[in-house]
Image (cartoon, rainbow, N blue to C red):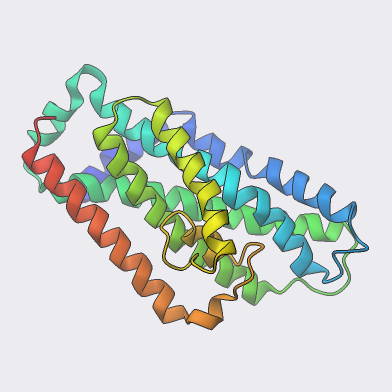
Length: 241
């Protein structure tokens, strides 16, 4: 597993794709801040109102696109020059091959969540919001957002095993992110894989994460991740790549 992770890290080091995880969150942060400042008469909850505006753009548009792009990219890399044959010829478990890609993808989501939290605090200070930012809740939302993002990574990697195109899985990820908004509006955000990230980040949703409980959210994320990991590992084992 360690060797496989190192190999995935080397692929990431040579690719400019990871830069999107640092650059793209700046756009929704700017859009969310502009939207907040333009509606101060309606958005009266300070830091919490700003958070909903930031995550509205981040969770349903930009992060799904970023996750779709990266997952599609690392799977597409294996299609180049028949790299699957070389990878699967190595003395390692097939599940480790998928897990290494999932772990690296999840780490990229975590880095993005940290950056999103930092941009939120910077934007709030620049907007003149009084008081200190709710750092305990920001950390909690980013951690649970990473868990939900891990589920989305598992789903997207699974899809990219079937769909060899680079662009189509990205489109599916964006559509999934938009569908998450619908499920959240219907109080089903805690069970739909594409809404778990937004739900965990408490993004402009009628629900509060505490209503369903932290443990329940973690269990759902673990179950989804385990199911898609097992299914993907079986495909890699049985299918002619």
